[in-house]
Amino acid sequence: MELLTWARELAEQLLAEPLPRRWAHSQGVGRRAESLAGVLGKDAELLAAAAWLHDIGYAPELVKTGMHQLDGARYLRDNASADPRLCSLVAHHSCACIEARNRGMHAALEAEFPPVGGLLADALTYSDMTTTPDGRTTDVEDRLAEILERYEAGSVVFESISEASPRIVDAAHRISELIGAQR
Image (tube, rainbow, N blue to C red):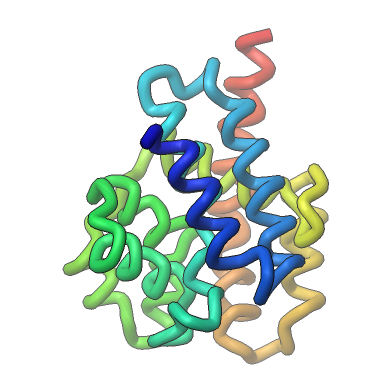
């Protein structure tokens, strides 16, 4: 089965019924990533698959650590025999290393899933952080503000996103510039 079809179907199976809003977000992120095919070239399908799957770790049946990035990546590795780069993209999406450090899970994250940096990581961050929880397109600054409104100050997610915001904004702007240059 084609990677992208498999990723869409797995994400839907895990998220659509128990978490319809998370599923709507994942659909939007997946479509956003698919639109970047011209920028990503040979890695376009890998990026799109990671985008569809990036939040599967929220699925109730997958929650083990409470860190959705790590739970999703472990599921893909252990139960779906997914490509290691795909697992690493899911594990590290949107500056997850900061949240992992704040949760005391950084060593496990790094040991199990080597980071995939550069354009692929930026494009996944862009896709995630320019998509609302309902799957609509937004700008990165509004998305970050929305996340911070949802979480209580002092919570691990609030603190992690606050710290990661400059890196997230930079990644989104780099991809926006590439899109602009391609037009």
